[in-house]
Length: 264
Image (cartoon, rainbow, N blue to C red; front, side, top):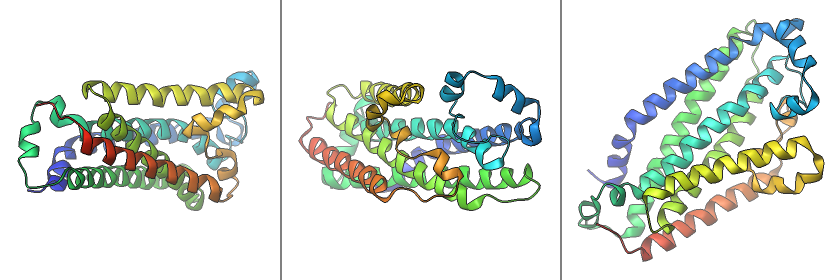
């Protein structure tokens, strides 16, 4: 069995668990929509919140009584969850042989380190694509169920394409840390730490426009939810730069992994 299929098989159980959790997250979140739509109790509660709290919750720029606006509020947590999955997957899929002391079983294969990295990253890409697609399908289904059959599919496609770019950025970030850090066990925790720091930076900049320059450090702020709710397209330059950052991290992963002194 080649490295790609080994990684697909090894991550199948985790992918199933994550998929179930994401479907449940979307379902439970959308079930609350009736409390916000048509001026429900939830809508009144949101209006009574201080502006700073609304900003921290990510609901300061759109109408949560409308399905697209409500989904944007829920999407904040969907994006965070899938980003965590991506960064853990990226670091784990590269570092697991050193972490589990099974490096010799990988290196005895008649494969170059570059081909090993390629197979592992392709397997990681398949995993994030599947999880993104499952979450999108669940979101499309439940938004229709709780919106009297009215679809917001075009807005959802924009949301989930932006999410795929964020996933791609974090999966390559995790892989980069795993390839560069001397201690493979620390790559996952460091990668998650960087992810959470970037998330909190995004929350801080929500509180004051004076710190908007820091948004470059937070992939969670690269794409504007409010514009997506309005049906606007993603900014082409932002898409290109996000993809370019992922490519640079991938190149760095190849470079450092090929030079790495593998522990056994």
